[in-house]
Image 1 (cartoon, rainbow, N blue to C red):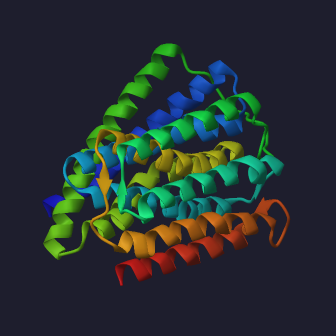
Image 2 (cartoon, helix red, strand yellow; image 1 turned 90 degrees about the vertical axis):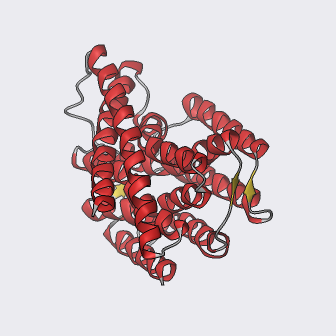
Length: 312
């Protein structure tokens, strides 16, 4: 019972922390006058990827590498199969050329880079982590210098810049809540896994990954409701890139991550590559350059199939 309480409290703190970070991120972006898709793919992505980063570093340091890997791979699958699906079921997103010339290819490049590093030797080494962080840095430099709008978006009506002290306060509160939430979530998840004899990988790829994807869900749904679709799609694509290059990159620099459960290499990683690739044809079919409710249904079906095969 205590473990369930830890998980619920942890998730609650992750949601609150993600929300506070999102507020501070949008306020900062307004001050810096950066295009919305770039804000979504940088500031907001980093804010909503913070739970994955904290959970993965903590899990790796605590001796649960499969929880760290499962959390990131599962979060990337959940971001597209669950969060993006729910977002486009609520309202369609029209995308522009730069989505398939920059954003999607970089997400696939990050996914294939991770696959290449971990598939053959079952370990993310320190030097591989450094390469991943360098690739992320180059991508961010490119984004900030050259990226154009990738989403056809309505104009924001209610963007209010926050005073600087409030921005800093939300940033501090958000970071603290994410740290506390991740501590509780890992403690509850690992204890629960041990109680039921479930492997760390399965817990990481389901409970923990959905938990750490909740800030993305909250951010994306709020963004769609507020007609900020550029932030919504940019946040999800950006979060997947951050999860792989920043979260696993930084974690493996701190401590090399070794795969313990081979299911991650024989099952999970292929689902992540598959659902990441699937986004491209969905953008073009059935209507060109649009993600609508039919695509949402396809993504949810794929996600549920993945969960079924993973748990079964």
